[in-house]
Length: 245
Ligand code: PEP
Image (cartoon, rainbow, N blue to C red; front, side, top):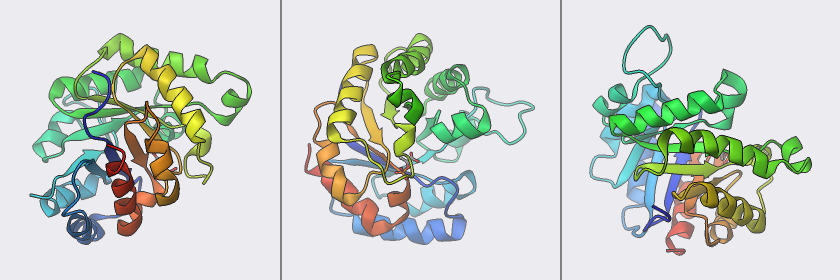
């Protein structure tokens, strides 16, 4: 599977932007990126805003992804949403295993792998997140952690044409501390040696560091949190990705 033909830039909105704001934001983003070619773009709004985004982006070449998806299609799983429901709402894919889901909401390597499998089997694209904590990096455990996290996904899914991984060092998420391009490249090359699928970098990507990160040979795009909440910042990152392809 290997690298993407065009880089992907996905904006993870986290718990920001309800339906009203989503409609106006997506209209502005679509207008801003209208002429952009050579990069695939996705936005990942909260569940309640997904259909607003889908409708606002009709004809815009910007995909809509959810921030999570369950591994069962229906059932007594209060608060969860299934891949089939997301497809029914016009959603193209889902993030699974974001470190905030692992750290704050009990996701494990096993549940992340199950979420990824079911999302893919149902027909969604999946962006599965992996990455080490700061203490793990400082303790020289980065490769062990990545081997365990990627290994769990690889054991269940293997390589799949709709599977993308995101390397998100937890110490770089929302902190303003980006991995250096060298650190990102090293981790991406290691991950690719375990599972040869496209790999996005995530962790404080901003317009001024995006080009150098995405120029690394094993970086296939970016998963962007904070900077994806602003049309101009997110559009600028998409433009930097475009100049890499
Ligand atoms: C994220 O939430 O996936 C992320 C990378 O956040 P930020 O860009 O804000 O670090």
